[in-house]
Image (cartoon, rainbow, N blue to C red; front, side, top):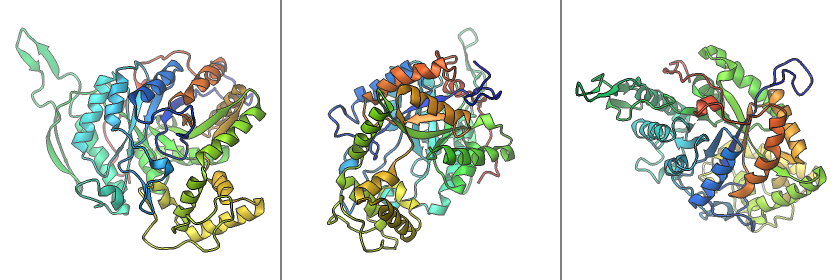
Length: 464
């Protein structure tokens, strides 16, 4: 690999990490496109995974949906399909892939450590060391209605439970060293250590003690992802995560986030390379940059239909706006303030902490640029998107990584399941020519793909 970076300096080139996000239900997906396939058929998951592995990606990522989201008591156009169980899908994908990492989101609010640790240890064995766990939290009672204890967790307690959940899980993973199974038919000894799997973990959330029944997994424990952006979430990641699923996709926002989070690692005795920052991004490719921009405009209007624009605006205004024209002006009335929200099950609603201020900001933007409701939603709801020829996209992606705005990207194609094919065939070879992306897998585990150190076996007690 060359020692010269993209700006011509002496800083060694960083290797780009790439992952594929199976989009599922969100405002990235274009399920209505004639080229779109099933969101739940295994053939769709298998196609995306095989494409990602063919391109030598680090991993495939699955999000989680524990309840179909509703608005004004109804499911709307982007929430019409569900998500199959994460472990079932990843276990099936382990059988049709050999090297690709398999990352899944599992909630720490509505599950129990023994159950989740057992499932991830099993997945790590089934995949020969390719599992990853995106640890997320939830507090809303709407999602909790699907579970026996309902919305029992206060919002301010969710990260404390997540920390304890992770501590308990690591105790379970570490309850086996890896050399206990001797299986000696001559002596008749199967276990070399009669205490293999014994554990005990007691905290304010958990009081468990017993024996873990899955011997030590190839990676010791799964690679840990974190996806929150709050102060608590950033500190949780600095203390415990191996990678962050970031929302900060633009160059300046990415640099600020990268500097902030990497700067927190030292207090936990960690090196900057022990935590990978991977924003979710989209892409649109064309024969020319102008062609790509034209395609991107079409895709955005597919992603934000008139109905979707009204529904996303309702999440800020917190009132029924179904009588408004999406091609017309923003509502004259202010957002309603209160505990009740018209949207249920959407984490993004929590980000609208000051709806009145946000409404003023959006009105000013709409007036300055003469935007309709739909135009405004398109402008404010987009995530970082690389648009251009394959050469342009490869150049820009490499710039982001070499300038420390990220360590790579989680690509969310707008089409399922074939949306990654063109990127794999055109952009990846250009990154390989630049010497910033692998041409073959050097290792077999996901931890090796991500250049991560060996899994630590303890969680700093001062974390969160």
